[in-house]
Structures are given as structure tokens and as C-alpha cells.
Amino acid sequence: MAAAARLAPKDFFTDQEWAPISARSYWRGPAMIAHAWALIIAAGAMVVIWPLTLPLAVMIIGTRQLGLAILMHDAAHGALHKNLRVNDFIGEWLTPGGLHRYRPYHLTHHRFAQQGEDPDLVLSAPFPITPLSLRRKIIRDLTGQTFFKQRFGAFVAKLKMRKAGQPMLPIIVQEIKDKRRWLGFGLAVTAAGAPFGLWWIWPVLWVLPQATWLPLVTRLRNIAEHACIDVGEPDPMRQARTTQANFLERLLIAPYYVNYHCEHHMFMHVPCYNLPRVHRALRAKGVDERMLIEPGGYLKVLKLASSKAA
Image 1 (cartoon, rainbow, N blue to C red):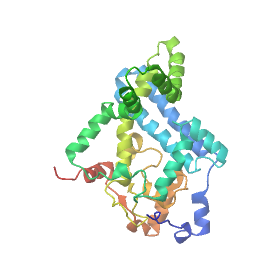
Image 2: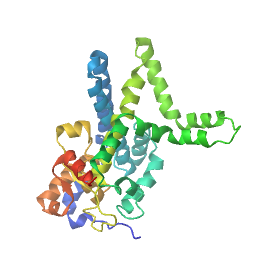
Image 3: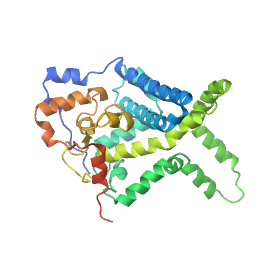
Image 4: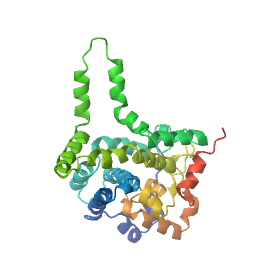
């Protein structure tokens, strides 16, 4: 199948309009990474002082974990820093990492957006689903089942499939190697907090949000971006959805302008912090009427995604 149709910025913007929109910054990408980590630390400090705020902290931290992944996604497009070497360094080491594996995968998604070869199509193709099915998915997310399957499912499968008499130790050693960055971060945080009686910081204030709220908001993001869009959709303005988000949705579901996904697919190398500017400019030109935009927020998208009759 042919690649998805692409749009040329010159068809929408003059050179003078496009130059500031497409410009990369030396400081804004690093500032957003610093902002994400600052919110994570602040939410953690809130729990240390007021333990009853843990549920709110889990939501804030889980959303910023998603935010760091979004910023790594920007790095995959070379948009996180003006210097590409710096872009790749901070995209790899100040976010969840895996940038160099993620980049070719993700660029394939853009090349074949909503076409048969789109590697992300499996995430959106099942929708719409029934309300009961959506509730089950949400329960699996919030109870850690999704996290366990994604992070340890392959390891458990290897253990089950090993031949009789085959030792478990090599499989366990390989799993530790595969998870060494995640485990190393946990050991470092635990070692730093233990002398102050805060040995529990990593499991409670990192793994718990990662195992509950992060899978949920990641699912909501995937649903909002491409669910209920026809496979093979030819119009590049309707291969991805922009969801208008209010303050609470930006705080707890959609950080760092990830909701402007139609604009991102139209002009994928524009830094995320300039996507609202793209949105306003296209609206001023009347182009937004041709785009796939959900003005009702994430709740409206969820209703659409769960509109299949039981």
C-alpha cells in the first residue's frame, strides 16, 4: 500500500509565517523536561508532608511520566533541541529512554498513518467497542494488570516455555539486563531516600503511578489520537484527531500539547510547544473546518470510542 499523503507547509503558510512556527529552540525542550521532573518531585514532596494526598500525586506523577514519554517522542522528530546531538542525548537520558529504537518505529507510523502498514493501527482498529469492554480495559489499567503484562509478560512467557530441566537463572539474568535502567533508577532513588526513612519513594511514588495511572492516560491518549478513524483514510487532515482539552485534562491526562495530534500529523517536525500556534493559525485561515477536531474533550472521545452496541 502507498504511504499516507503528506501536506506541504507552503500550501498553508507564507515563508514569514512558517519560519517561527517550525523553529526549534535551544531552551524550551529542556525547560519542559525540567518542568516534568519538577512536578514529579513536588507531587512526591506533597505526599511526604500530607500522605492523604497520595491519590492526587499518583495522577500527577503518572501524567508527567506520560509527559516525559511525549517529550521523548518530540526528540524522535528532532524537535526537542536545536542541536541534534543534544536533542538525542536529552531525549534518551532525561526521559524513559529507548529513543533510537522508538524513532524508526514511530516514523513508520507517520509514513503510513491509518494505512495497512501503520504499526500503531492495532491500537485504534478495535474501536468503537462496547461500554463494558472499555470499563474492563480501564479496570485492567488501574489495577496494574496492563503494566504487568507489558513489562513482565514476555519474561513470564519465557519461563513457562522453557524446556524441562532448563535452568531459570539465565532467563532471570537476561531479564535483569533488559530492565537494568529501570532497576538502576529504583536502586538509586531507594539508596538516596533510605537514610531519611524514605526507602518507599520509588515503589510508591514512581512504580505505583507507572503501574496504574500511566497505562490509563496512555490508553486515553491512543484512543483520542486515532480511534474511530477509518483504516485507509486518504485525507491527511483526518488521519489523526485533535482533542480540545481544559486545564484539568492538560494536568491529569494530556500534558505538553499532546492533544494537538491532527496538527502534529500534518506537520510532524513542528515542536510540540508550537502546535497551539499552528492550531490558531489554521483556525484563522478557516482550515480547521476540514480537520478532525473534537471540541468536547476527552469524555466526548471516550463516548465515541465506546459507542458500539452490546
